[in-house]
Amino acid sequence: MQSALADLIKNPIAHRGLHDGNNAIYENTRCAFQAAIDHGFGIELDVQISADGEAIVFHDEMLDRLTTLSGPVADQTTATLASTNIGSSANKAETLKEILKFVDNRVPVVIELKENGARNEQLARDVARCVREYSGPVSVMSFSHDLIFQLRQQSVSCPVGLTAEGIGSLALDEHRAALDHGIDFISYHIHALPNAFVSDMRSLGKPIITWTVRNTEQARHSAAHADQMTFEGFDPEKEK
Image 1 (tube, rainbow, N blue to C red):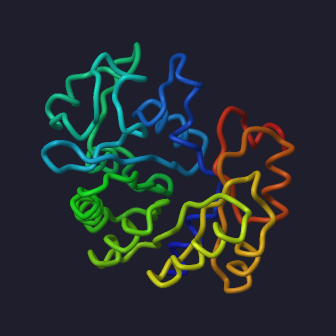
Image 2: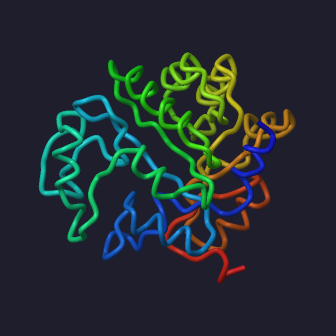
C-alpha cells in the first residue's frame, strides 16, 4: 500500500487527462491520456455506469455537453457509447477496462467514481474488477461515502480516497465520518486549504492531493498544504 501511495503523489496529475479545454484534445479521452503520458504526468479520470453494467470513462451524468446523444450515460449501452464521438474528435466514451489497457502501466491512474444512486454497488463492482485485472499503479476515490463503502465491500487492494471540499464544521465532520470506511488518501479542493480536517489527515500520514489547480499561484498554495496536485489548463513543469 505504501508503494501505491508513493506512486499516487510522485508527479502532478492531469485532470481528466492533459486536454486543451475541449478544443481539439477532449477530456477523458485517449488523446488526453496519451498527452499526459507523453509528459510523464499522472492521469485523473472519471467513471459512470453504462446500461449494461460497465464502468465508462466519462465525467458528466448526462451526455449532452460532449456528444450528439442526450440523456444519462446510464441509459446507453457500451456498444452505443463506443460508436459515439466525443465532441469533434474521433475519440469515443470507452470502458475503464479499455482505457487501463491503453495506459498500460505507463503512469499512475486515479479513478473518480461518480454518484450513480441505486447503481453505486454495480459501478463499484465493475471498477473493482478492472482494478484487480490491472497491474499498473492505480487508486480509486469518490465524493460519495456510499461508493467508498461499496469499494471496500469489493475488497479492492489499491488505495481508496475521499474527494472533498468545504471548510465549515458540518462539512469537516462529514468528511471525518469517511474514516469509518478506511480511506487511504484525500483529494481536496484547492480553495478550501488549509483546514483542520486536512491537517489532521496529514498528521495521520494520509497523502493529500488537490483539485483543481489552474495556475502557478495555486500550485504554490497546493505545495504548501498538500503532497501533490491535480491540475488543468497550464503546464506545471514550464511554470516552476
